[in-house]
Image (cartoon, rainbow, N blue to C red; front, side, top):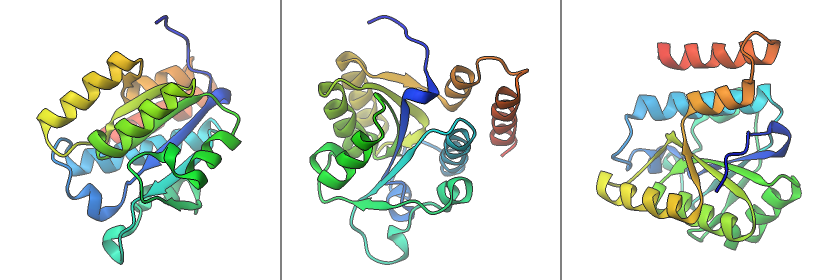
Length: 191
């Protein structure tokens, strides 16, 4: 696998199961870091005009609410509620991703072992380049998340971070969008 620079015009972001009740179950990422990283990814999506897809697991009431950081940056987005562990086996979610016409899928979500892993594997099988934004993900346990990430990298997915993503998207931090991306990183770090 060779390195290819990230082109924001070819990227789409999948926010997967970033719901308050599900986020509370993850054990591998500090909750504050997870929320700030999710907010940063949403802000980068806005700066670089990257479409974002929100997919959720069925949960009733407040535990099922999508973390507000996404809407704060991007406004309200359609919510695709699946009953599957894979976004690509849910027609509405898969169609929303494919309708963007973009072939690089950036994934932020919980749980890394479930929705992140299975969506990434399906995306890879369908010819997408996949990047897992690790600080915007959370796993059910360190051991099982590590196994999922090893499986994903062996399959061809790339693990990345919000800082790396911002750097890839910005290219040059002295340019206007690059400066905005750098501001997102400073804001995230200031937590």
